[in-house]
Image (cartoon, rainbow, N blue to C red; front, top):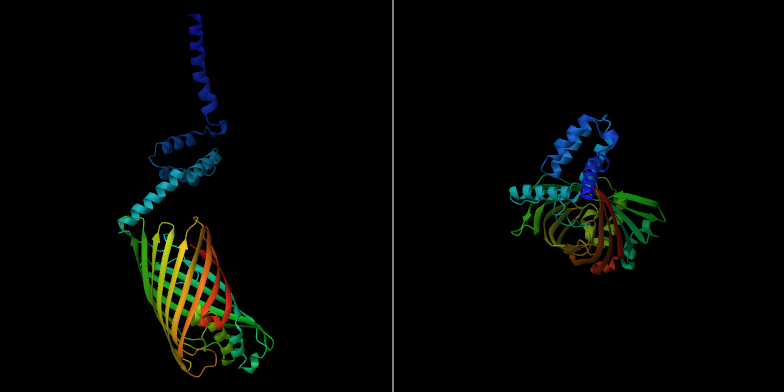
Length: 376
């Protein structure tokens, strides 16, 4: 009986001591205001509301003696999986309440280096490519005596800005340039055909709620390069146009371009299928050319931040089949382009290796492309 009474007394004593030792807040976190906020925040139903409560406390009481503990509470909540899941569920609910529309800036679908993005992302990118010219194109380049000892490689840069002021409207701007190191002139750099485009965007998740599908289409206009590039730069720009056939329209000298285009992309789990169609009408600079483009791509989102893929960039056209041509003829561009893309926060980057096929293999041996950019 005495033993039982002794055990009971020890148990009651521990029940009073443990809360004061293990569960009590540190001495510097006994501030009444902090304790009052903590009690109210704990009563909130969701992790998101608790995060909002601690943010309010930090904003309104930055000099509170328990400020460090409050910051730790907020960091722990923000890192918890429950907050991420609640935000994801809330976004999905808000999207479905708007008819399932895929809005600009959402990362439902993969992005591309060259293809027009079907989603109106808010993004600025620099796409740089090194083009190793084929012997035939170098021979054509030598038709102009100024380029007697021409370069083996060209370097192109394209600044691409994309913005969607509305969920159904996208704006695209391209500012291209090409550079080369020439024996006669040294390092030469010149702007290509700057372009401005408007497009409509429509997209939603299909019936199962997990399959995103987006289509877009619109019009692009480029005034041609003769306004800022003299005739002495024609062969440099045309060499870039034929050498980088996948961006022919951005470098063809003095070729005002009118483009009608449409794109579609479908997400199947971690895989994405894309197709782009475009009709280019070049009218100006003494030539009229027509190009029909078909671009196909497959991407695989291996991780949230990493996506390898491959694209087939094709175009059939009626125009000059080389630099210095005097008449139009039919030609065919084709490039096989494996690539890999990465994303870290707002930073985006990609690496592509383009292999010219068909007639375009007579103009360039291969192309190495690097993209860097920022999304917000």
